Length: 318
Image (cartoon, rainbow, N blue to C red; front, side):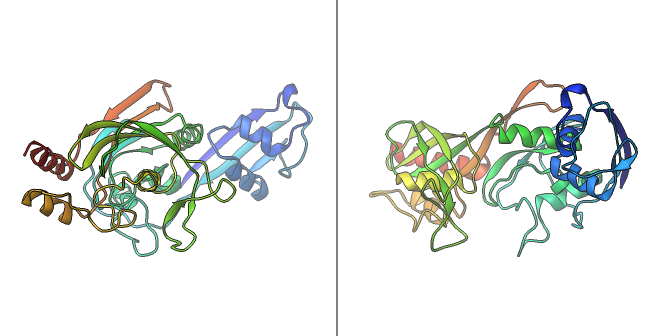
């Protein structure tokens, strides 16, 4: 646990605002929810006295914050290898392997990226979700950013919410995508299968926008570059299936494997045995939380997707 003490003076421009609003402005490294909790607990004082979240301020008051950053959750550290692409005092960029669950949940309390992070970086136990600010599906490989400090955590979340984090994927779909385009279709829970997502009405779903362009066409499949404008659960997988071009290997949204006519034995074997969605997060761009510098990283396709594309190329040429 980490103890800290901060103080700041309320400006005349902040007169008339509520305490929790002013606290969010004076201590931007912490979320308003966290600050409201500290106000209720008496860790954040106004002129040395306990106050309420909705108390109006006059200007000139001294706000003091004395608190302990507690361990967030009691997850176990586990020695799981990580592919670290970038590391500094503020952030980590990780190339996640397919098959690795990001965060413990029902049925997956161990063997996750979070468990691995706590082993390699024990200090992350004081950061919400061990610094994880976004996710990739279990069977999606590729780049993720992790916060190493509370200020970085807040900055990255704000960038994601403002759609300022750039994320580009490579995918291989069933069917021939004729040209690039965009999908603007809200997503929500599937009306029947509650663990799945589906395109739904604007009233019941959340905005979801996906942009895609063709990298290469094969006889009956397409290699795509896909860029997210929003980051909803299963967004690329659902949107491409919605267009009629499900990802190869997607056992949730792709249905039974489709074998093209006159496919080579190697291609038939590859399609039948490609057991994960052919999706890889290959580009990531963001503003460094501390320096403000615009940074970007790339992670080449994993071996299974390279092999898939190789077999598709051979079938195409044959």
